[in-house]
Image (tube, rainbow, N blue to C red; front, side, top):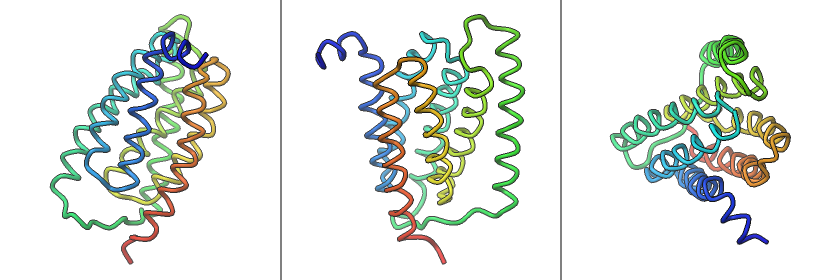
Length: 190
């Protein structure tokens, strides 16, 4: 049964494996995180296109670009870098921009595409995911808190689309984000 699901859902399965490796190495603050995240984004971009989740598909393109940038940023940093806290202003601006993105992209997807699913929710999650990635690249500890909240909503959306493997992946992401938050808190800059 599992083997047949893997064969029928090879894009999803491969994306899941790469994503798990990406989050694992991110928790460990290891440069390899960005390579696995780029591979996962390529695979999930294909999957989301096939399921009409266009904002999620577009997000994968952003994740690829940010993966390259993240790789560069983390590579040039010292080995024993420390997590930092964001300013309240940067968090407010990031969330506001994410919500504005969700409204604009959701509207455009309902007007310009057909067979779009969860246009506004998907686009808002995309905006928040962009912000979460920015926080992670800049070693802001709040990235983990944002990922926990975003991943909970993603689980519900993917269940609605019958993307069972991806739903399970995002449940795992929630637990990994909790672990990442705890791990990064231990090396938080004072």
